[in-house]
Amino acid sequence: MIEIKTSSLSDGEFNRGVFATRDIQKGELLHEAPVIAYPNDQHQHIEKTLLADYAFEYGKNHSAILLGYGMLFNHSYEPNTDYEINFSNHTFDFYAFTNIKKGEELLINYNGDVDDNDPLWFNQD
Image 1 (tube, rainbow, N blue to C red):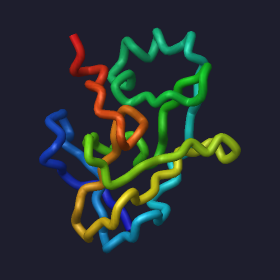
Image 2: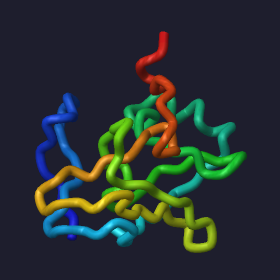
Image 3: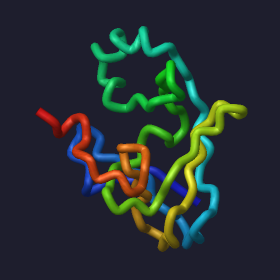
């Protein structure tokens, strides 16, 4: 259903993104990314690494590194994908927010809410 390919939206060293391998219907579960959670007071150590740009908030007192394809979804203020934190399974569950065509890149809003248009943390002064 999904695969990793070169993305024109990413300008990092690897230029990767998540893409649909078939048409996907709105609401369909796309991926369950397992979580490695850590207390927020340990984030200062993560900040010294490249992983700081990929960490997600995981509840009030924790952050998380996502496994699987979880950290490879690129950003859009008009996302076609959304996610929910599944604390009981310790996963981030990614769903189609819109109908998605085969070959389309799957995009999330890095602000955590599909309607949040605030500037991203790495674009702020």
